[in-house]
Image (cartoon, rainbow, N blue to C red; front, side, top):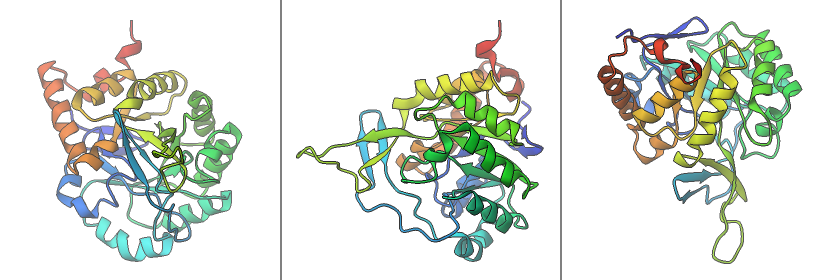
Length: 299
């Protein structure tokens, strides 16, 4: 079987990546990371962030609601303390970056341009911050403005992670494509609210983002919809916990998939998805990943 997947000129050994925010920075799980197609780091902002107050995560039927709030050490500490360790991992590395002004995205891109990473994933979809994140991603014009500004500052693989919260991701994907993005990730978590026994918000950030199997059908719908609307590759994300889930996303039009919540249940979640996917591909005697991409829309 032909194993490589090419997106934006970058060759991935296989189509399964660990999603941002669910696999740390990857350095904690080097042995697993080396066997994946790639990893997307936890989000990095220009300045250090403490994140939202606890509790930050809650289980719900068939899913998880998190409200981490982009806790991270900031760009300078990330470069000094984490990047040197990331360079020892032999897989594709995408750094997820988040800003609260257009200029912050520009400075993040410029600050990482000379580093030994494979690409950037613009976080225009985080639902757990009051500004930036999904607020940016709900406006096609803002998605285009930020993507275009970063595109001018980087030659690396440029991926835009989109939200499906109160916006048609087909329109924001078109905006990202028009501005020079190499690919789009569809989707991030969906807005959610958890109440305690007294009817008060349970999460410290009050609201959070729903992930896990509960959102898979909707995420799959979004991937199918976006893949039909743009020419750039789509990276599927949302409720992938098994090889069958990954297979479905590829058939819906994704070239790569990201595994998120499954990594929170077990650090080898993405690796298990890859192994199960390989079994499915072998049993169906499929010769290459590309041959199944988008089959859901073929006659």
